[in-house]
Image 1: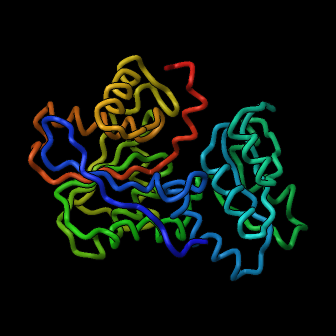
Image 2: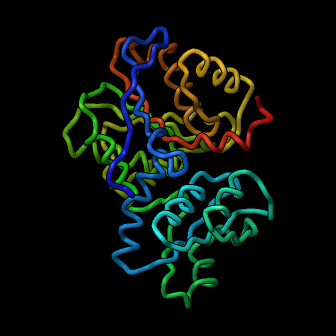
Image 3: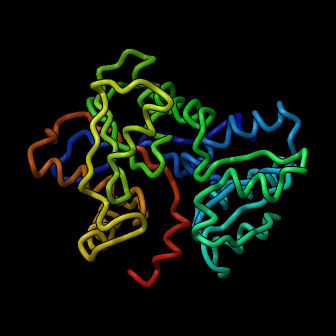
Length: 289
């Protein structure tokens, strides 16, 4: 299932940029999308090597990670259970999870904070259970995400990615370092107070001068938006034909545009944006449009 992927690099026609490209990880799979596919690739290999057949993971009610894990488990002949943060709800994302056979356990927000404790409480006696952290955060995930760099046929002055847990960014930084590139990695935390992302990245790979965090593009916090961001999404998608989501990729592309306006980026620099997928999450914000 994880052998061949379709993730081309596409040039975007967006003034004033002359060399703006996007890595289309959103095209890898409709449900195991973008960086979720890359994170789960080696996690499922680890589960297989450990002879585990029951994936246990965590996420919010509109989590792309939950859908991806449910789909990956179903296709691999595995069971899957997810602890869902918050009160019991029904929505399009959780419907997909259940269709793929995933069992859902709704969990109050305080208990959810200690994921290892939840895993032990419910699945200590389940010898087939395999722990997968929220968003797939793990050493295995960084290895999968680092492969983005090895797939590139050209070098870039700048690579941009959005960050929630920092795992994808860690993989990208590792890939840049391993190949000895001079590329600058720009990471856009989508959470308010995203400076912790640096520490998360450092868990997996040494921090180097390749890394630059931009902390002012969270638009109020995780899954938060403003009218300005929504208008940007409408403009960008109509202009480029590329769908972007309000939680991650819209904030990343907004940052690229804004940094150019501040003269922090030269519009003639060769820039690559990583489209990490997650478009299904737009269902949770359909009222914004």
